[in-house]
Length: 382
Image 1 (cartoon, rainbow, N blue to C red):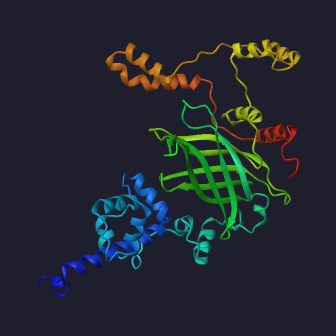
Image 2 (cartoon, rainbow, N blue to C red; image 1 turned 90 degrees about the horizontal axis):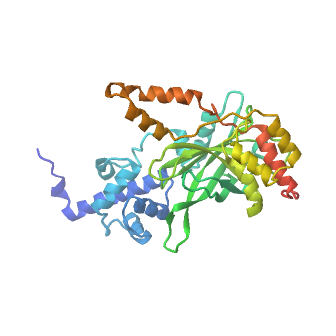
Image 3 (cartoon, one colour; image 1 turned 120 degrees about the horizontal axis):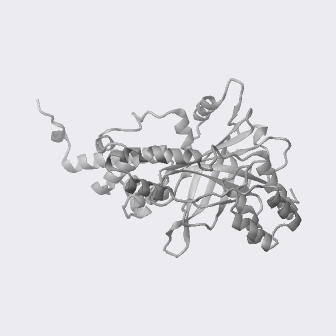
């Protein structure tokens, strides 16, 4: 026998019932992904749907009289990564998507059972991973910091100045990062900002803090790691950290850079002394001869020390060229049969080039930056 659903309900009533189910599913998905109506509006705008918050409220709260356009449904399907069929026909509140306790906790569903599940996923048998915000290991961390880092655009050398916050929220340490986004200008002509929100985990055995942050609008994660050893209740005043993120612009490549955060804002003059410490440098200092001689000429460093430094070192000439230029030269001079060897030759050049196997913020780097700022009068009240 044919489906007689339409015999017992009018087409209009059926449309209302389906629209209500869609609205209910959207409310569920927004909660799952940590959206309120405003951030949901911004996410849809990023997807190319211009819509105001009042319209969204009508779709969600008054589904019996406000039908959601197909274009909006398609973008919602893409945003939440669910099929249109499921979005329209399933009831997510009774058949929720499989999601680990960690993911649920990470999008800030703060029920006690989720916190417990999240904690157990990260807790080592020896309690090496600390996630409970009332643990004394978090003492001294909480508060607001000014943060400084270089942008990931090679054409932009001006540092980014933002805010970094760690707070005790819902029995977990939550972190917030807000930095300028120079690629987008608001209607008022001011820089917009990128905002990241997440959690902090401390490794008790390694004395490192791991910040896992996300930006839902961009679909992006970033990771911040810095050293922290609990000694007293004295507030942490500053720290160098390593940041793993993706580059700005169109490439969106994995990128590592340094960030410095401080409870006190730095003056422009003092910031210029800090910026060299944000470079991905190691213990070996390699400098061009012309720059070293210029420092001597301008007396930027006490001359006896600089002269001794120059005399005690044997200068070695270095060549500098872009990888793309090497590639094009090899491509030009190699026969067609040898084109497949270009990457081998590049590897041989890279093998002998000056480079670091890794970048590390060691104790000297942290100590030197802090001592520099202490000498300049910072943190005297802490």
